[in-house]
Length: 398
Image (cartoon, rainbow, N blue to C red; front, top):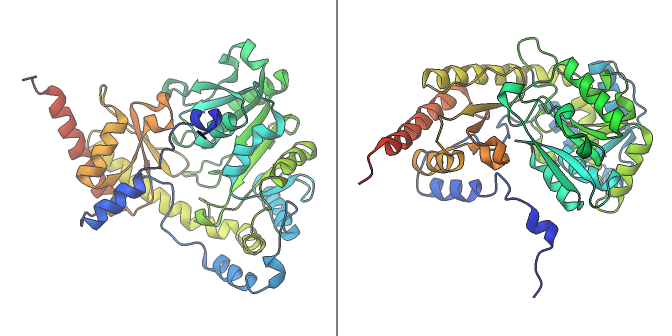
């Protein structure tokens, strides 16, 4: 009998896998569903970017294979964006790489630099691409729980030296999904120093760097001295420009590391659609203009949702970045059953913290993908669902 490989069998279930089918069934039954599960903003992409894509698809040359070289204009726009945004210069040809969304680049990273049996350091809760890429590369994941008392920071200095000496990759993500935590500069300096000391490649996921509030500015890892020796940084147009389905991002780093990732990708894909890359030039060159209203919208939603949650008794903090709220549950309330009930009984889709790994238990994630009124309504329904769970817990056994 042909069976899935051991690598595939080792993969945990994906957090969002069952929500679409349940949501579809509920909608067909007439339920008003508020979907705050996936981080997929309902706002359209910027109109000038859509128009640029409309023009690009009419050019037959942009329907050809892009391969990994991609469109030089896109790489140059990436370089201009990085210089404006962070004051950093990267060669558009040798130090940047177009990706089919940052997710695939992150998942392919262990294949580029690690061998079977090597260790990859993975945060938990965390984006499943880190663990998935590690397991599919036949590497050994060393999972580091992220704790609120440590500000949800992955501290490499607390990983056993025996593990660090075997590690080839460490995945770090700030602003963070799902916790919305941010990383102070001294933390980034410690992390770079540890990677240099042990020869670990730092896969720095910076997909949410432009979604920040209240004056906070998220840095690039390459603002830290020495980071160019040990890091590859990943960016995405998905959240920043409401272009999730376009599947376009990029990696940046020193030439030999970019070349290794390029070689892996040469065997598994032929690069992003060139017309998308052409349209993305407009997005990147006008990023400041396009991002400002998206940030303002998300901040309004954050404030409305946090205020409602606190008023309903959920002790959630007000994050400085990202598009998520990481909401604590009362002790003894399991996240996955609670979220399943919230969806089935109240028509609200949120993600249970345990879907991001056991260390995420005790929380659920809200994606700020609806307007303030819908978010307030969602909180009202979530509070009802939680009240029923608590009542059942307190009810005497018959």
